[in-house]
Amino acid sequence: GAPAQAAASGHQTVVVGHRGAPTHAPENTLASIDAASRLGDVWVENDVQRTKDGELVVLHDNSLARTTNVEQVFPDRKPWNVKDFTLNEIEKLDAGSWFSPDFEGERVPTLEDYMDEVEDNGQRLLLELKSPELYPGIELQTLRVLHRTGWLDRSHIRRRLVIQSFNADAIRTVHSLRPDIKTGFLGTPSVAQLPKYAAFCDEINPNYTTVTQGYVDAVHRLTGPHDRRMQVNAWTVDDDSKAIALDRMGVDGIISNKADEIRDALETG
Ligand code: G3P
Ligand code: CA
Image (tube, rainbow, N blue to C red; front, side, top):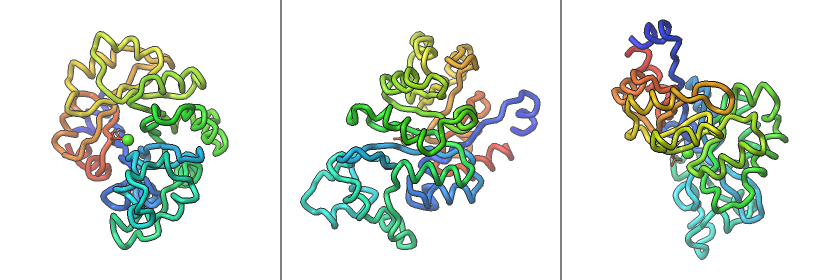
């Protein structure tokens, strides 16, 4: 099974809680990372966006509509984009009831509060800059929040933080601002293009449906900016047999909505 292989090859696939533990608590809330923590998720993933008044918050969609009660509270503000609301307005919203009445009153977290909670939980974070093209300067701003919350000290940078984005320019910017931070590109660049990414990315994080053995091997042949073999983290994998297949291809990480179940599946093989 997988543990024997892992022991033999030194390979250990990390399973990352996508938006926390989104089958147990509303995604991207503090309740979600707390639930993930209770389930044993050491690594969690989130999505960072910016309010009208320049505050960073954790939310997946560009719009508040799906995961809050914004349509009820501000009926005239369609399409309810995060960038058109102040933090004060967003703090009035319920980000839990859409998921279950048990989470009524849960808030959209600020990135600052979120980082403190990840810290308190002793977790590690794959932080996604979501739609950075909408938010000029969000890279530096994110680094400032990370600095304020103690996440840019040596041990956090080395072991507990990766910043990723679908937007290669944003990742290039993070890398040039703080070359010691590990970074990931979300997508599947062609094998020919990969060496270009190796200049500023430690990880290539593809949609799992695009991952083949040849692709994993091609990424692994490259050395990233921190003199380590580049890594592959596949998303979003909620099916045991698909996770096992990816594990056998040697991916370094699997991002899942059901991280605990997938971890069990990999252990029992
Ligand atoms: O972590 C990768 C994955 O989250 C990317 O897709 O849309 O869930 O942010 P999305
Ligand atoms: Ca994400």
